[in-house]
Length: 313
Image 1 (cartoon, helix red, strand yellow):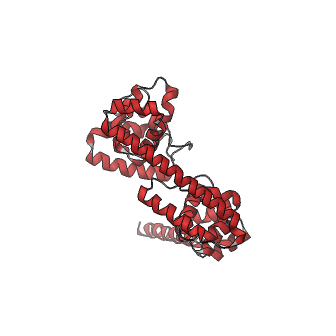
Image 2 (tube, helix red, strand yellow; image 1 turned 60 degrees about the vertical axis):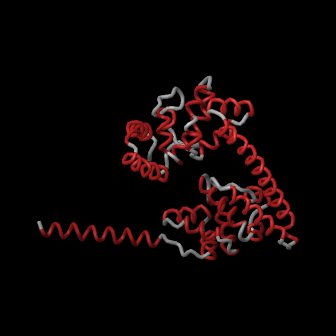
Image 3 (cartoon, one colour; image 1 turned 90 degrees about the vertical axis):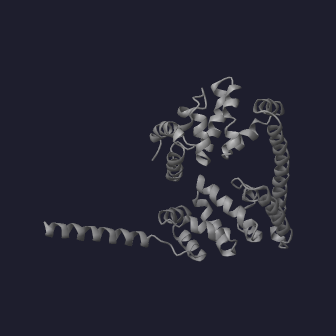
């Protein structure tokens, strides 16, 4: 028996040694010239895949976001190898780098890509952050003197100014809408938002997990005429579930006709067909806290998990 156990332990030790060696062997030296060299030898897709397997992609994003010229050169080579959510992540990283070092961002991106990079596509930024971002980026863009970049520079300035102006309009509309919500009862506020055609603003607030707006969902559903009318609100509630699950579970516990456990929990937010690992980990962590601190929502939460289980991978 002792001999058998020793053999088992020896086998396990060998297994983990080889597994660790394979994992370490897959690590890439995080230097921009090394990244470019590997892309030239293989492909952007192969390097991105290897970085993901080694758990290094987030480190690469951080290095690119720092605005170093050589990392921005590497980013331009890596970008074709990203797709879907990763492509959005790379764009947001470059948007951040734009505020630190805009000249190489323009230099290494095509004219067609400039409009996407020269934007303010951040996840729930504060007003103060955006005000500072627009001011900083526009100031630094104006300082670029390279004539070869003039067309990209002007397009970027135009795109940033357009994003700033749209942000100002949205902020004014949002302030007006929030003022309505503060001054009026929820029912009257919703009626006025309908008159002003501002349902989209309400859906955005819900999608971002704003509790006050999430709690208006029963009132919103009461005004819906059909399942088709409800589809956008169900989609917004799916996003909200990822951002702030407790108030969503509160709403789902009310057994509404359209915005209910079956419709909201049966599919992930967006266009994905299945919940990805990051979604699962984030939700399960939040659900564990709710189970401990908000027992009144546990039955609804368990029903939601049951609906989700078929789409978890």
